[in-house]
Amino acid sequence: MTDVIDISEIIATKGKNHLIVLTENKQSPENVRLERRLQELKFKQELRKDWILFIVRDVVIYSAIILFILMASGYSLFMHIYR
Image (tube, rainbow, N blue to C red; front, top):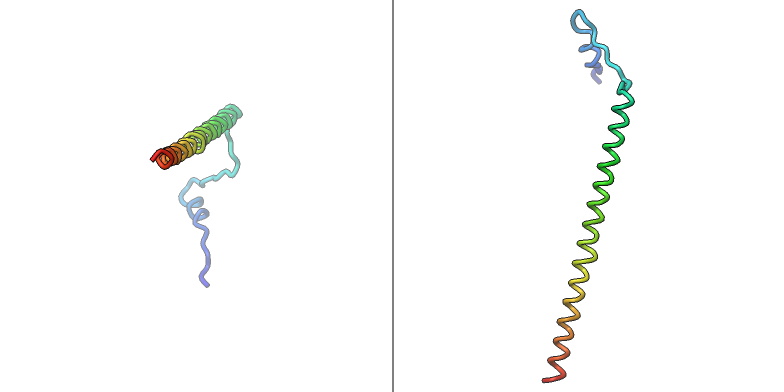
């Protein structure tokens, strides 16, 4: 098995100035609050879109299909009775 080389160490120690990689997220509280607010707005928008699709697909389309089937069967029954 070959030796595994950590490329980040090679890049960090290359040249005169060493590269310092911070693992912490150094955002200001305002940026964190704005990011959280943006995520909440995106979630609400997705939820609203899902509800609109539910209403259009499940309520309107299925109701129209059932109404069409009932009208077609009623017309067929009417034609058989009065023929």
